[in-house]
Length: 365
Image 1 (cartoon, helix red, strand yellow):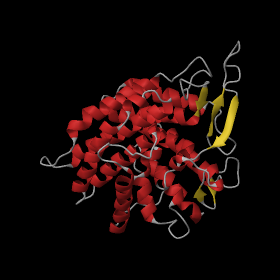
Image 2 (spheres, rainbow, N blue to C red):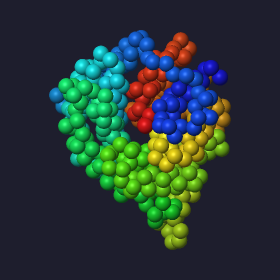
Image 3 (cartoon, rainbow, N blue to C red):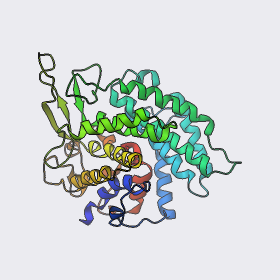
């Protein structure tokens, strides 16, 4: 079981840092947390430095080798890193440096082009700027009056999150499968796990972090979760498959989700977790957390079973085995799967990296 520790760490941190709604009986079963050591901080800063110095172009405010959705995800890395550094004594100056890069990314993001992308791409943008709002709010709460918080950027970041969220709402479709999000408005109807999980997570994050506690966002999150939960999108192992096609879409009669794509990806097991944590916080219903732990357990025990995404104790996409992963496949589980081996598998450096950087999976809410 020890070889699965890094997978457990990757998925369970989303629940570890929660509100008082976290069930005490579950909390008592978790290992205790300790403050990060200097070595952990050094490795984290190295990772963030590599990301920004190696892949970010400050003059254009973008990640040139990325594509629209992976750039949005990397921006989420950056915002999460700012949040983390802002809470560490002696690192606030560095957090300000990265905040300046986040501002550059705001202007460099191709928001016009992204508006014409699929709904999942649009929702990555929402989550990224909500992550930035969380960083700003934390800085406002904890910084001294004489320190710069970046609060003047909150309205701009919030506006972009809202604009893209409104676009995403247009993907909710009741004419097929009695609800659920469409993947894309431009292709044959496909209702997939990632778009619906992103919609749940973005909706509850809008409710919790946008600032107005609009009940519409909570309603969308609850409705989206109920639909996904009852969609039969999980396999026998309890893992989310990719999604459903609709065989009768162009015919007469009821349009139901009846052709399931059995492909399993790591991020389809991770994105939902932040939504479940947020729903538990917003509603006080501990059942959402229990559901999350069941999904974590399905991942950890998947090796050798249906939809296997663990091989030799390492999170693995199917494309990893043949070495043909694209940028999409690399981003699905972030760099975790590529930076762990038998020498550093249990390293708390990886734990910290998961907690702070790999929010790109939307695991930490």
